[in-house]
Every structure is written in C-alpha cells, then in structure tokens.
Image (cartoon, rainbow, N blue to C red; front, side):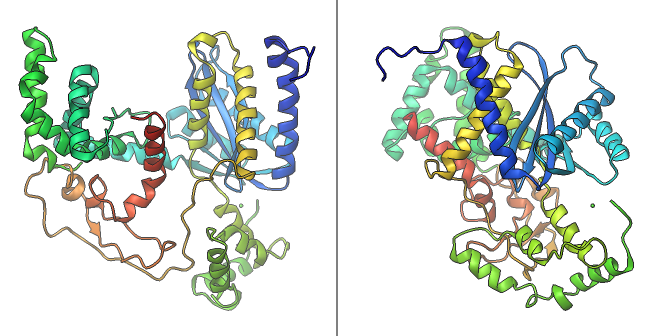
Length: 470
C-alpha cells in the first residue's frame, strides 16, 4: 500500500495497462517458440452476447498459445470466409512469433473440412487433420445410436440424477444415507454433451454411491415420493425413478515441401527394420529411456529425433525431419475448447458489454500467468503418460467368447458390437497397455489402463468437490 497512490480506473485497466501486458506476453511467447514447429487449431463458439466467434491457437512443443479471436457474426458461415481468417492467422504466427506452421487441426464440420481441403491446395506442404477428440466423441455417439438399449440405460441414469438434484429434500436424505454408508457425501453429476468426459464421470460417481441410493430408496420410499409434491403426475414420476434405483438389472448394465528421393526411401525401410543408424543401439533408446525415467519425466521422442537431425536438406536426413514434423503435431483442438471455457468465465452476463478483443486479451494474460506460475512451482503440472520406445508387447484381437447375459447392462455396453484385445499385464508405470473394447464403458473398473486415461479428470473433479465441501 502506497499512501496517496492513485488506483487506475477500469478504463485504464482494460485499456493501456491491459495492452501493455499483452505486448509483454507476445514478446515472451516469441522468445519461447521462435524457430519451432507449430500446429494451428481453430474452432467456433457463440458467447454470452450471442456473437459468433472463431478462435485460432497454435501448439509448439505441445504447449498451447492463444493467437487471435475473430468476430464473424456479420459473415456467412462458409469455408471461403473461414479460410481467409486461417491464412491471416498463419501469416501472423509465422511473422509475429517466428514459427513454422506445419499442420492445421479443426473439427470435421462441413465448412471446417472444406476449409482444410482448400488450405492444403494453397499450402500443399501442410498437413490437415481432424480433431481426434471430436472424432472420439462422435464415435461414442454412434455407438449409442446403434445400440438403443445403451442409450436407454444412460437416459435412465441421467433422469435419476436430474430428479434427485432437483428435489432438495431428496438430495438431503441421500446425503444422510451417504454419511451412514461412506462417512462422506458424494455428488450426483449431470452429464452434458459439450464436456467430453462428463458422461464417464457421471456414471462413475453414480456407481460410487449406488449402495446409498438403493438403501435410501428402500428405507425412505414414502418420504421420497412425498418430495415430488401433491400432483399425481409428479408422484408417478418419482415412483418411476425410485423403481429404477432399486432395479438390480439397472446396476449390472454397463454403459513435410518436395518429392522424396531414393535415399529417403532407403532410410525409411532401414528404420522399419531397425538397421544402421536406426537400430536401438545406435539411437540409444535404452539410454534415453533410463535417463528420462531417472528424472521422472516422460520420454521425449521428438528430442531424440532432433539429436539425429544433421540439418542437411534431402537424402537420409529427410526421415529425421519428417519424424520431427509428424511427432510435433497436436491432433486435437481441445485447447480451443478450454479457452472458450475461459471466455465464458470472463465474459459473463454481468460483463456482457465486453468486446471479444478485450476478452481475448484478458484470456491471453491469464494463460501467460498460469504458465509462469506452473514454471515457478506454484501450480502442479499435469502428469504426462510416458511412451515406450519400440515396444514389443502385442495383443491379439479375438471376439469375446462370453457375451453378457443381459444386453441392457452398463458393464457390457460394447461387448456385442466389437472384438476385444486382451491387455498385457503392466510391469511399470511407463508401459502402455490396451483397453479391451468390452471394458470401455465399464465405469466400475479401477485397475485397467482406462483408469489412467481419465485419472487427471477424476482427480480434478475430486479436488473440486473437496474444495467446495460437496
């Protein structure tokens, strides 16, 4: 506190001071990423003021950086208009930050897909990829469409969660039973389609509290029906929900810019056969694996290929350059989705007059502060899963020999629709394992490889619930 100091008003904070901070962030970003290989990403969103926005980001060394936000409310939603923005953003990335944009990622919507096809015609050295996160979400949706019984089970679970959360006395009775059963309350999370892990976490927590739910509905049946009020229709709805809870069958249901030459082809086949400089010994894979494990870090395969890059254009070295390009690509646009969430936190109904550029600048500064806090050790970074080098483990796919007794169950959702691969037994934390398709929607499993995929999301949820004492 400085006596007599003048506190800047909101216009100074959101004007000159904010612009100065954004300029500092741009300088630090260029120092960090200059000379790197970038993957461009874009996605669309509509903010609280009903403006249609398109956000562009770049990922360098797997670190996301916000680049630009366009207001396209007065434009036609066409691939041609989107391509103009993308080309301008690519030019901005290369001129302002000194990176080389090697790929562009977006969802598979019609205008975005056509835009990426036109982008490849304009810049044929680039790689065009669909967002794998969006594709995974669509695949899950296709599974539910193909299996009506699976969709019915998840809908019943969502109705159950919604009913309890909408009746304060019912949720109070449930929390009492949870304290008796688990000595802690467990929240019922309503799944939403715009959050990719929401359905998994929702079903997972519903199974966590299944014992207390069933006990609650048996011991407090009349009181729970009374929570619905006096209308006959509401009381009948309550009885349907309680019948689902006590139904045993429901809980057993599971839900690179020139043509390649001869030397390049020879190098490629030597790599496939692990010969010459691409043998495990010459590449020192065991040494690097032990080194990264000793430091408690994930194996950086891109860095290993950079050690092999002789900086010679053409010939056998093109294989190393190609590997660096391919392995540097980020195959999803999840960074855009996370920034849209930040936009929603900043641009609220009470701040609905904020322009999209002000919101963009605030989000840019916030992202830079988070990065600095992480580097300073004030925020624990997400733990990356390690990648094994030239893994020799394999698994043979075979159809499931024991189909589930009941086709409507949460534990056996995909068992009838796909073959399952038996996972190898994990011997170390850095060994990848395969998840059988028939376990993909088994939310009760805790020890298989699927658990490690979602451990970050599960832990974040648990930390948030603990913070709010839920």
